[in-house]
Image (tube, rainbow, N blue to C red; front, top):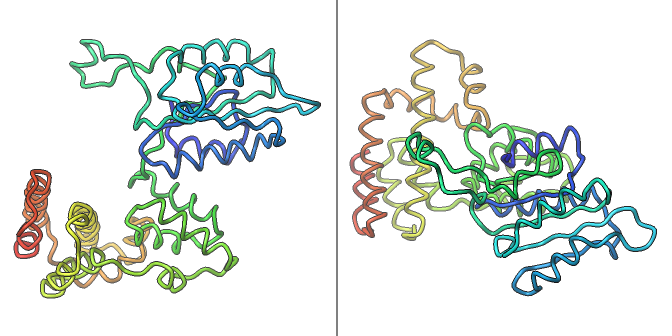
Length: 331
């Protein structure tokens, strides 16, 4: 099993698809992106490209197409099966893998709507170690396949996220990092903005992104509160909808981490360049945080994080009134 980031890095170096690919995960933009990458590389002629959807197409028809050979003189055939989590005979994937060598040029992509890879029930030892159960046997594909779980990019994969954006538009890495942060990790929004920006060619600037991506009240609240402007944060809160509260807490937590890092590195006498380099794709935020970072020592960060945790639990419990106001007051 591999993550989207691992798959993307490997595919950029050696774009050779395998006979079977199983795609799943909550980040549907990345699921679709991986499928399109493989399709472009296989490049089947129209008559050898077969898109199927379980629920609209029967499972019998799905397996008939999976085990069919390319039509005409074309050497490649690609079958895409959506809603693959509905398969009642998924073990037949193993049957296809066994015959892959005798039918080169036939590729199948199973696109699951599930958030994760199907697994067996964890053993007692796995439960004790709080580990997941093993991947189901019919998805142990070896060198014949990819099992890709597409989850949102994280701090650890920020560099891949930036490279992913630059590969779509050719924009500079710092501009790509700005787009990712302005979009609050919403990959659908990032993808749509990249499609619009592609028409501008290579000279894409932060101003161009700002023109296409209007600032949301949650962004204004986060910026104001981190800058210790509680009055401005309350004004932004008045324009927010409750559905944005949880995401705003996540943004505040992320910005608190960054402000704390700037504080700690400043105290340790690191240069601005060193701090920006450590900030990765958030380097453009560092200059604005330099003046306020003195407020974010370890003790205060711990206190704020307790407030954010309590607020998150309150929101999960169904509370809405007064939760964000309390966060602002206690920041």
